[in-house]
Amino acid sequence: MEVVGSGPGPKGAGSGSAGAGAKGAGPGTAGAGSTSNRRRLNRAVKEALRELGTELARLNQSVSGRVDVKVTDLGCLDLITREGPLSPTALARRAGLHPATVTGILDRLERGGWIVRDRDPADRRGVVVRARRGRGAELLRLYLVDSGMNTAMDRICADYTEEELELLADFLRRTADAGAAAAATLAAG
Image (cartoon, rainbow, N blue to C red; front, side, top):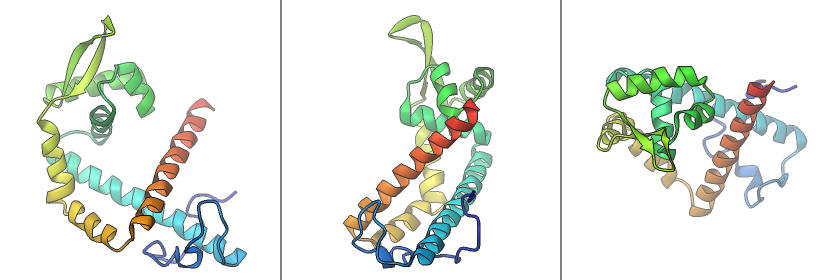
């Protein structure tokens, strides 16, 4: 069984050279490369994704320290911001956390002024949480401006055609879906 990123993939192969052999090939097609070259490129993509995960975790840790919010809490805040308002149960399920853990997270986020708990309009007995307006700008500034990430991403994206960006966006969405399915499989078993 191959573990994501296992084996010696070439360092930096994800920086434009990986797609060269399969240019014009659509999703799911083998491209023009040999089987061994394809395996090497697959390993390089997996290794690059592992490295990306590590670096994004480091970025989250840095932002977390700047705003005095635990990394796990920051992840929940991101889910609330992007998908909210959410019930605590829905947040726990989406974050893959125990409901009691989410209660503590929500308490900390509310004390820090990051979220608001409201009555669920669909069920007045229930509660939903939403991100507090205005606080998101502080996080965006850290992630995108102060860290230089926004400028770096703009420079990276400028190197690709619109068609290539569509392909990359599709790849990343499908990879995120695969990660969600893998997490669900582990949680269930």
